Length: 320
Image (tube, rainbow, N blue to C red):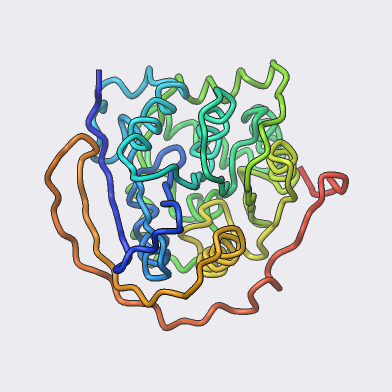
C-alpha cells in the first residue's frame, strides 16, 4: 500500500545540474514543518534543491490512526517512496530519529549520494540516552514519557526548552513550535531501544557530515562520536546548540557548516544567484500548490567554524 506523504519542495532558479538534491528526514514527535522554518529556504537560496517530507502518521501524511504500530523499517519504506520521485540520488539529511532511519536505510544496502546527520540517534539506539537522562534530567525524561503516553499532557515551556533547545532560545520563539510536536510511534521507539541488545556494524563509506550540539540533553556528544565512527568520519560539536539544531538560535551556523561541506564535496564551476520556487505537495500527487518564496536572510553567520569542535573517535571524553 502506498501512503500519502506530506512533502515540501524548494527549488533554486535556475537549477544547478551538477548538484544532487537534498532530502530532509525529520525526527520523532515532529514533521516536515521543522525543516521549512529555516533550512529549506536557506539551501534553496544557496543553489540546492531541498525537499522535506513528513513520515507516515506525522504532520499532513496519512497513517495518523495507526501511527502507534509503525516501525523504523516502515519509515525506511516512506524514505524510499520519496527518493523514487526525485530526479537523481539525493544527499540524505536526518535529525534525531530521522538520522536513525537513514542509518537503517544504508544498513539495508540502499544507496545515497551522501549523508548529513544532526543530533542523530546512534546505531546502538536510545537505551544509553534514556539511562543517562534518568540520572541527569529525570524530570525531563518523565515529562517526555508522559507526553508519549497521553497527547493531552503538554510539558511546561521551560521543560520543552531544557529538553530540546539551548539556554539562549527566547520563549516567544519556543512558543511558536512547542505545541506542534505530537506523540511518536511506540513501535518505532521500541525499535530504537531494543536494537541496543544487538551488535552494530559499520556502514559503507560515503561522503558524510555528522553534527551534534553541546547543550543537547537527548543525544550527548559521545553518542554523536559513535555515529560518526560508524560512518568513517569525525564528529563536529556545535557550541551553544541544543537538540533541535535546525530551529535553535545558532541554526544559521549549523546550516553554513553544512553548506561549506556540500560545496567542498560537490563543487560547481560558477556560483549561482538563484531565486526560490516552493511547492507543498503530496508525494503521490500530480498537482502542486505554489507557496510564497522567502526573502534571503541578511544576518551574517557568526564566527563560522569557531562554534564547532572537531571530535575524533579516539577522543571519546565527552560527558554521557
